[in-house]
Length: 548
Image (cartoon, rainbow, N blue to C red; front, side, top):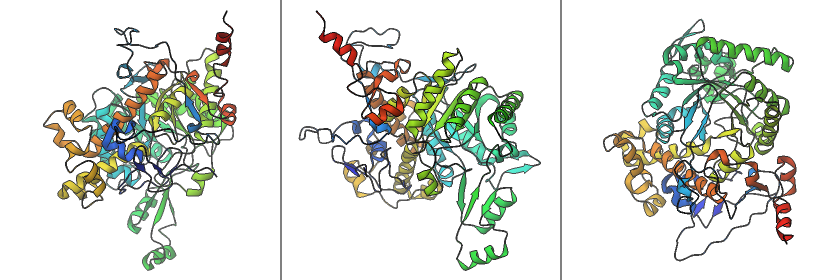
């Protein structure tokens, strides 16, 4: 069985656990001391695009075998002539056709366009305690870079300070906190997207948001995700909290109100409870009924005043994928996020995550095919975001190209969370009085950081002074180091993406196409309809050879 290598000598990176296709460990820890590529990139930034120890080394490709069907078995085309998508004012002169001139700005939406400086967005950061603990780092980082962040499901429902009466939210302090943290640094690029599931709909989240924030937020309906095919879940270790969640209407397993369960908890046989959400559309029998219910839900949101509405779907299969694309297009939604199996989660049943659903590359390939069918009918197809195990700059290019021209963003979950963890740990180690507030996990800086980077934020983070230049000398003191780490990682990803695009002679995102990819093996060609390496361009090559 093929396994991804745990270390990369060229970049001087290593995985603590078993690496997945994304390059991240299958189990990513908030207290990790390094040093996978994403972890290192959150400090080194774009320097990690290149081999280490320049001047004393040469480096060559590891030439990993291209086995099976995955994003890593797509390869990126390069060309030796031409330049496409140059911004106004730039010429095709070599002095202008340089990778820093590649534009990475994108936008999505129909009647109302949402701009993003870079073609990424976060996955849904909902009721998991990881999202709550590190929200300042995630949200401030997303805002200063300028990309959308998603507040996931159940945030109101699990908030003990929230007040809900008869389906109307009277108070939602945790939801408010998350929105306001982002808004403090929002400058017109990016967005706050708030996700709703069955419980959120019952609790009146949409009504609360529109009344308090108007069109400052985007509302998202959720059909599912790639990590699991049941509703979201969290784990709680307090019996009192578990009872509260059950009384608020959630499924809690085991049932904390049963006397025998309470006795087992007191004795230590049961140490935690799992809170689950409900499945949607359980009373419907076919896609016609789903369509009717969905359109009614969209009509209701429009009547409340929502100008921007999005949908998130998971890796259910071809019928659901077709429904998502068709219904979202018909409803003129602003974005459809398609999450394939192979991504990550805060808490999903492990063997479910390992064995259910359609892997990302196959799901995304069919999404393109189905979008093309609608486009051929003259329909204005919903803008797409692809998600599921994507973490590097090459993944971003490949996902955008695989779904071009419909894909506008690449949704990244754990990859964008890692710098938040890292920054909080560093800040807590440097400033012990902040450690508990920041949920830092380190008492002191690890030796590998001290030896390679230094002992101050200015030394550790390559992006520190870029952020300082953006927010100012006074404001930088208020920026969480986790947000600076998010900026630093984003800078590396975007510099790498610019380089890949320049090599493909594409100087804006709209110019990227499926022709900029080729398949590394015949299986990948079959599943993606991307041409095999030596077949791509072969007809033109033979015409060149036969020139008189």
